[in-house]
Length: 137
Image 1: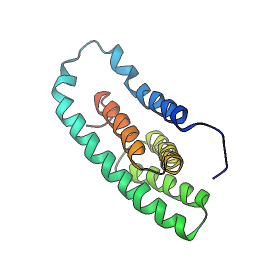
Image 2 (image 1 turned 180 degrees about the vertical axis):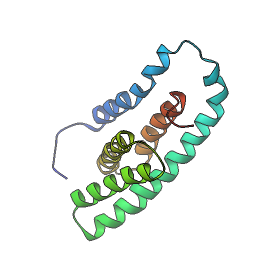
Image 3 (image 1 turned 30 degrees about the vertical axis):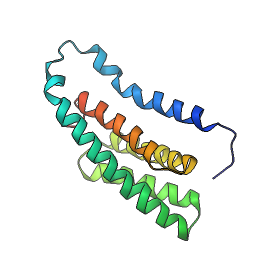
Image 4 (image 1 turned 90 degrees about the horizontal axis):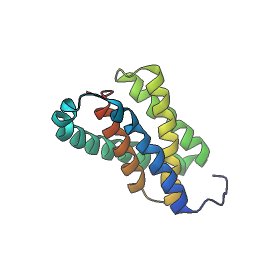
């Protein structure tokens, strides 16, 4: 990975702010009753999905591919694969492309922090927002 001078807390703060933008459409909804019924589902789905996807894509695949190739190649392959996974489960091409960019971001988070936990947190936030916005049901 190219060297840069961004401090880790600043990097993580920007990632957190970016992840929280998923909640903006919720503030414009007129009716909140469906959110109440989806809270338990939203949080449980988001947690399980974020943990499993990050363990598979960044924990296992990124680290395994990185052992045998360059880091850049490993990041690109896992990000594209992450996007294709979302396409294969029926998400639109746009959401799948955004998922690929999300995979790129999560890979950078894992490599920068040397930990999978921040990526799981950001992934969790995005998933909760997608459930509450009705993008995942």
